[in-house]
Amino acid sequence: MKVFSRAEVQKHNKEDDCYIIIDDKIYDMTKFMGLHPGGEGVVMQVAGQDATEAFYGMHRHEILVKYSKRLLIGELDAEGKKSVKKFDNPAVGKISKIPFMESTSPFYKKSHHKLRKWVRTWCETHLAEIAKEDDFPQTEHMPAEIMQKMGEAGLLALIMGPGEYLGWEGVPKLPAGLTPEEFDYFHVSIILQETKRLGNYGLVDGLGGGMCIGLPPVVNFGSKALAQKVVPSIIRGEKCIALAISDPYAGSDVANMQASAVKSPCGNFYIVNGVKKWITNG
Image 1 (cartoon, one colour):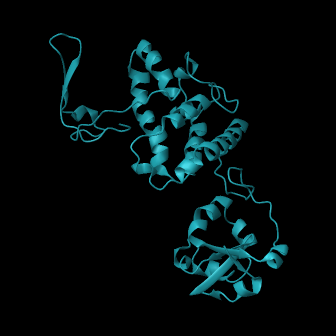
Image 2 (cartoon, rainbow, N blue to C red; image 1 turned 120 degrees about the vertical axis):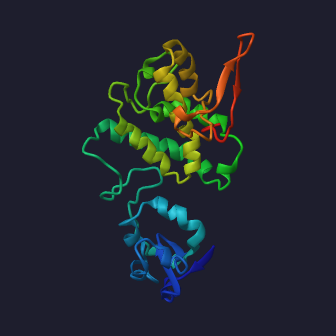
Image 3 (cartoon, rainbow, N blue to C red; image 1 turned 45 degrees about the vertical axis):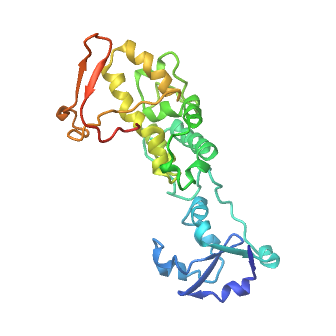
């Protein structure tokens, strides 16, 4: 990594040649100027300067991590590092102290804040590295070990949401001290927010999207005996479930399905005929 003095950085203070300092690292903002959500003027206010305080006044540390690969070009020399002002910035996975940086609600209780911290830590520990893999959405299979870890930790139950099934035998307990009685959809919204923070929507939807579509029909419309047989293994991450409404004439309009399932002459299985276009989580 190239080393710069503060004096060298100060020379790069124009729109077509703009460097900034955050912590003790140097970032080339020249090509990013027009892409900055706050506009070029915001960046130009700190062009060639130490932008650490300005940056952390508006952003979480994760933003820095996200763009470092594209913008990071060097670091300050030893003399420059001596004058770096240290800030108590939230590390990756921690809750931000910056006002309004975290989503909140007047309906949140202690259990909601406690759950957010637990989910953020879990995701950063077990999913963050996988989410960074650029080709993950194109991989052939969802890693079985990840699904099982999520199941064992109770994360799949959280994604699935409140329901009678939480008390069934074989269904893992909810994490962070959360009880089925206090579990509500504000907790579920926190799960969605925290998993989306990983920045890989294909990964997140692959981990829980198909289950949230495929499992409710079993829970709500299947016999209780069937549901109690099927649900626990899915919530534990041992098996996957797919919503096989693959008929191109239907999509989510189940009543318009053209496919048929006719019992075989021997009565032991069904013969399915139709046209397949998609299967969520298939």
